[in-house]
Image (cartoon, rainbow, N blue to C red; front, side, top):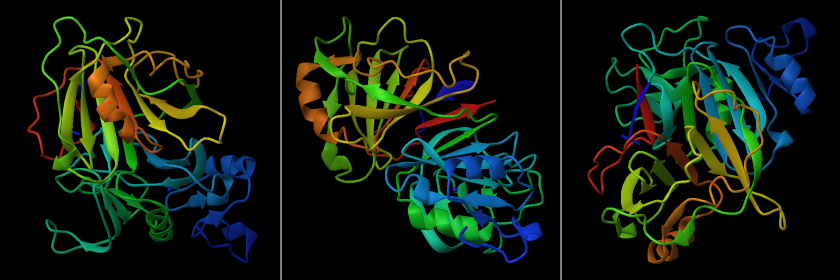
Length: 321
């Protein structure tokens, strides 16, 4: 996979045999796990009370035609989906929702209804309610059952992380000492800048490239800064980290999702120093640390950073097959 910077109902049915006809509410992680393994096209399970607060992440598994919703690293919902058919494939990668509209209609396909749209690419690919034949049949979007799409829409905000992959990995959760640390600029480091005024508010993403020994900071999908980054030599995997909402005294909690093809790393605990050992110049860290709050996403990749245009919206990560 060539990587480049571009930058989950609430209805219980009377008849047990029809438990999944419109989806179901569950009350425990064990029950959710059991139901999730039995889903047929159009079915879903939703148990938001398992993790009432924290940042939400959606993992779309193209091979299984299933999407899983995690809140604060805990699975709270699973649904069958229909993704893009041949010629209109849903792009794989790591994205941020950049637009929401409960009553959206397509700008490309005859004003077709796209209820509960949550767009995650700049060319219109989105999560929304749609047809669910049991196989990829959309024009690129991720179709979900109507009620599931409605519930998910009500639980999320612009900036939610969406990971689309051929085989979704389960997240790991652990404590980290921090998000990068101040230090000397790496030898041969390039120029840096920090211009938060280009996007004054919104979710923050940081993309760190090992090959470039540099990082780019985006807010609401807009590039607001770049900086040299000293990366530990043992960092060889591509992974996505999202800061969770931890209890007081727990330290900084992180959720990690590893990109497929990176070796046997799924489910392994997070190294407490995984992110704290990334070093940026002292002065730059002083500017950046105010942005490091729960919900921030950090992508660590081996791929180079494409040259972006400051002030323009980008995807976090996309894949070319």
